[in-house]
Image (cartoon, rainbow, N blue to C red; front, side, top):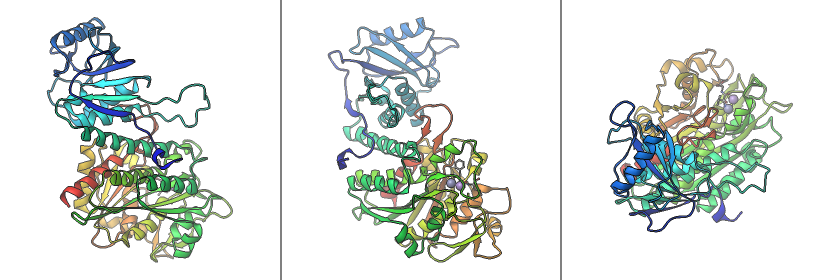
Length: 504
Ligand code: BES
Ligand code: ZN
Ligand code: MN
């Protein structure tokens, strides 16, 4: 694997201010449409400078003849011989509001891309409304994961071959930035979608290293011996039930000192979570291949920060372990010492995420960051509280709200949650400084956040993003989100890094 060829390869993207003069081979033009004026009226094409009245008329007549609808993400393919493409794919934006949020454009582009067979060159006028959202949506929607298909005679589905974003105002740079962001998300998805048979701590660390080196990051890996020696009791304790020992990966991007800010990223990298001796039920245990979704997003984000040359320091600290039951596994009731010295009674070996994260958070704190963003598939309680698509954001009040607001802007929709003081009492242990679980069924997501708060250094603004369900789509595909790994919250974290780069 050469460094230039590490990770997901995005389709090529270009920007053009006019439709091509000659017919493009195997091409499709994606055109946004909206609901007609009256109930039941045929959809109308969103006005754009690329299609003249005649072409618009032809598309609208065809849509009417087919009884097409303009509702959000509805799709209709028509043939328009006067245009230099094989076909036109009309995609609905819903109501004719004249203004659409970035995520409406992103989802429409994603739905359109999902319906293509991958062999086509895509042109679109969605980019005249919002170029970044259109390009992101197309690449995210076109994402496929075929690494483990055995049919080698079928060509590997490339998703999309090439994208031409039609725009009268955008620059090539905007398109490239959007493609880079979508590529980072795809990298995170690839890591999540790689099964636990093939992605275990050592292999995960090697992949992180390859991605880091290709982006010219400083890479540091601690193996099980180094972890034991340095006192990473949480990572060692969780990892010791597995024949595949744990790792701690550190990836550093040094920014040009514009505002001198430093951001620590921490992500949970449990390559498979059986629960350990406190074993999980068999039903849906296979979903626990996604228990390294936080780590995947953090790795993708620091690589993206380097690619975009953000003028801040970004240091990712990523604990990796496999949580297995065995004769060498930790037991419920064991006491371990987290990195830094706090002792913990492990009452439930399935609450393993907070054990590896506490070590990583303390290590990240030694770099004296201004901000710390940590993200994890941490609790089933996240899903009970917020559902499958809404990450829970906890942390210091101001930064938590900033992270949640940016998450909503990028369409990942993180929502702020409190950490009530009284929950700390639930983590009292009779033998150690802390217990790793509370005795109560209430507020499981907030209890986990409360546990992590104990390890965040004084004065560091921090946010904890629980992505238990949002990291992994177990339902059908929707918008630009496929089944399986979603890459959430890569775009949230990158938006926060860009915001800190611009505003401190
Ligand atoms: N990895 C799980 C959380 C999870 C559950 C992620 C469902 C994705 C989907 C985590 O390690 C876990 O097992 N948490 C326990 C905590 C409990 C023992 C306090 C849980 O949520 O049940
Ligand atoms: Zn877990
Ligand atoms: Mn668990």
